[in-house]
Image (tube, rainbow, N blue to C red):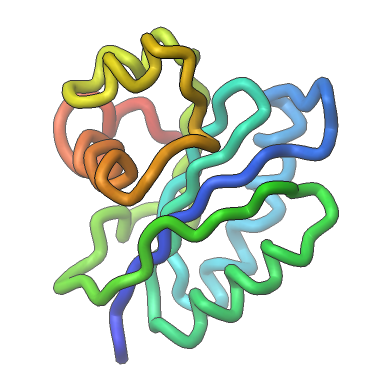
Length: 145
């Protein structure tokens, strides 16, 4: 297995997408991810998504292509795709976190980013890795369900 993770951001095409709709979608995706041995996490903030997919590189690349074509997403941007020694989110086929911008701004290294009015959609590789690191360990991990 060529274990890798892929991190991307995107925006919902639905103007008033709420957390209940996102939860329903995530619950529907979890069995499909389990069937292809994909793990990871999804953060939903103000209509934008940050997702980490973990698994065999060809499998997560194919899944990302499918997500990129999904009409419910726009501005789909791959930030990171690289090999990893082990999974960070092995216990979740898709962990979900719904935080406000102000809550996520409390994560070290991200305060100035969000304080300047940036959203997930303006994130670049370095900050994506900081966010991933914050959710991999520490109190932010408990925000996943």
